[in-house]
Amino acid sequence: MLPGNQVKNTMRLVPIEIVRPPAYLGRSIFDREGKIILNKGTPLHGHYLDRLKELGITAVYVEGGSAFMDLDEVAIEGTRIEAVKHMKKALLKFKSGGIPAQKVRSEAGELFDEIILNRCVMGHLIHIMSLRDHTFEHSINVCILSALTGISLGYIRPKLLELGTAALLHDVGKVLVVDRIVRKQEVLPEEEYKIIQKHVTYGYEVLSGTEDISQAVAETALYHHERCNGSGYPKGLTGKAIPEFARIVGIADIYDALCEDRPYRPRLAPGEVINIIRNLQKDDFDRDIARVFVTSITPYALGSTVILNTGCRGVVTYIAGDYPAHPRVQLLYDSKGMPLKGICVVDLRKEPGTFITGVAVEY
Image (cartoon, rainbow, N blue to C red):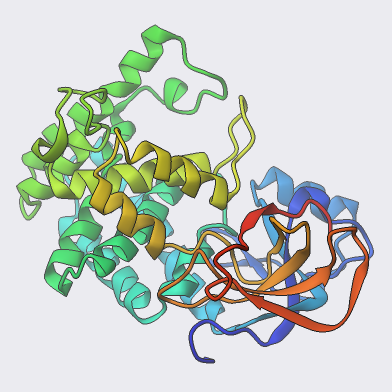
């Protein structure tokens, strides 16, 4: 792998809704079982695009362009797919009784080993894989985001593993809520919203009575919807009264939720979500943890086409591990939309007055 998170093969990450033929898939797409849905090089015509949208895939890598991608990520994504698969089996065992605590801890350990070794890679994988098993996929994403934050907070591996287990199980109570409500595709009425809020209590009750599950993990399930200003639930706790794991997982939970499509609103760009969290840290979130969170994750994937505040458009070609929100961008078009000649690269770490305002809606 190249230093930092440099990239090398010509491809670009493109939102699925703006892919237009002729376009060729830049990297293979896998389902939740790790089987290939579409092979690299497949022409992306209307039928394939429609099918990918049905599967909930929001972005694909397209061949060509000025961005490069390190294909070592395929192995890391495989670990993630396996984690989703095993997590689904583990959580569904709630309905038949018992939590395979050691298996969950093992999955957390494998994920954390990958995250520690490949922080930037794992950070942006959450933006390019969105399949239908929402609760399980969401749990993995929150684990990754929490891990990146824990690493930046200086957690040693045993504490990271405990945080990871807590993050993987934070929404486990939803398995015990009526499926009809959990899977509802519109804004919930107040009565049903109160029912789904009970998932935090359900999760705590099951986890606190399970051998090999710590009180810290159980409390994370109970308190991850608490907010520092007392506006959360179930108890309206404030500030440091909310356990630290719950404060971390709560931010990761919100981040991942806002980055996903909902029937009543489109997903937000990662950079927009970062700004929301920065604003919320004044009241809702622990300021110190929120500050670490927004500097630990990778809000823009390698290969994504972005718009700068200067009006120029370009492609993210390098993400430094210590400055993930300030990548290196190879400019393609000037502020008037005219193609730039030659190679023009701007390093946003060294240009404090230049920043990304959004993801480009064309390529």
